[in-house]
Length: 163
Image 1 (cartoon, rainbow, N blue to C red):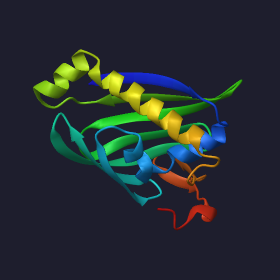
Image 2: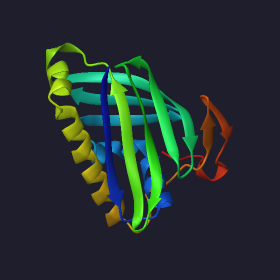
Image 3: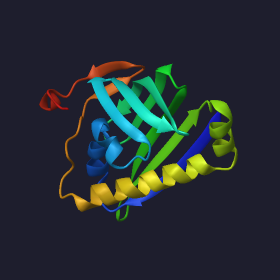
Image 4: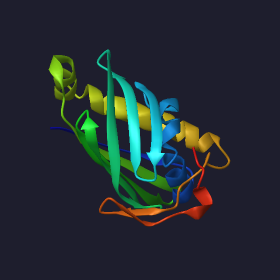
């Protein structure tokens, strides 16, 4: 498994960074190669991406989610990956840390993992996230529910009907 961990400081409150990150369907706006993300329900997401010139699709399950602290996932079908995003307060806003593991498929992906190309892409994605979240006065939405061990333990009734 290839591993990546990258962080960025954003100049918005932790709640704003977290709320924006929960808007999974907006990921194509800042994640290079992500074609579409569809929120299936509160804890399932379907991904479509172009990776090393090939279209890949996979399903992911959110196994842990605590408002303003962490979102953790694992793939359940398709491209094998797992990871977490941590949110921590700083003096000037929030630190967003992405940690992920994935199984490179094929020579292109294996070479990319070996030479750190994927880590560079995550850094670039985080820079674009920073620009997105700092340019908005308020996040485009947010889900404040909680997931523990793959189960929704606290729903957020205010966010029903979210995209």
